Image (cartoon, rainbow, N blue to C red; front, side):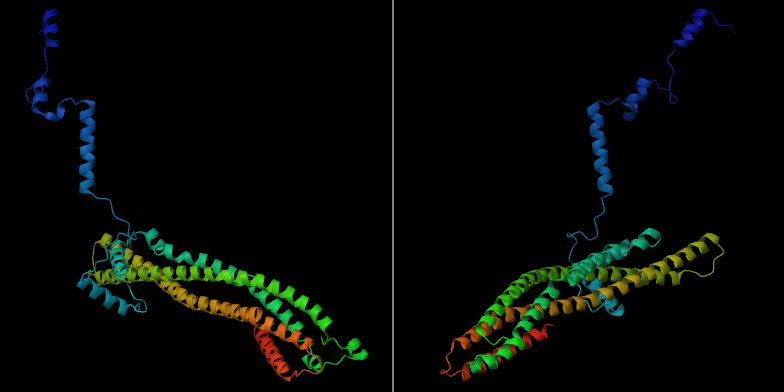
Length: 359
């Protein structure tokens, strides 16, 4: 049928209806989702949606943050203590916080993630380089060698003093003065004393630097202990998760016609093998850190022994020895020098014994 011009215009002006038989105005009135919103209404709706999303999916907490709960229930404690003894980690006394961290850590291990397995415990293992660099710098410093060097020069100077000749109060002969290098007169001793004072000052300077190194030893002990703690927690958590996954693997059917299930089982075995090797590496590193504690103690003990002997020699023995030598020079031939001679001989023996022990 052919439409006239007015019929075509009437057809265009007709309002279309929705599939439900309603015009757009009626549809908006029925469904609030189609109701136009102002800018503030849209912002309010967006904020409400975001808050709801956050409530439904809270952000995960960092594992090693200080707010980890210290509480460990009795069942978990008994299970963890049994595992610690079985895994031969009972050489370390775990705090409740550390037990809680280990329990949380073993639940978060991602064995299917190759990068996670590779980096497991890397934070703790990387601390070794910093500790070793500091220890190497400390042991290679020339302060200890400097103390020994100047104490050796002081020893050499004291051995030149001939107290037997001084106690006899006799002037040395011409040939003794010519061929004898020993110090048996007051002018020679005063000259020797200047050299001793110079070496004592230089030795004291090195000794002061050596004393400051004791603070570095304290820092190294703290770092080494912290690394040992971290490695122990990583090992405990990793071994617990490894045992759990190995038990689950044994319970799975070994024969399956599903190729995807077979491949998944092979992948899991490979992941467990890689993780077990990683734990073995951390175990070796933990043993190395334990041995390093003994090395640090030995280095500190030797340094303290050197400091104590050097202090005693510089501040006590050398002043007493100088005073007694000068007193021996000041005595007249008629004075009784036997008592002072015995004291001086004893002091000189003590001085030379201390100096020889530091060489």
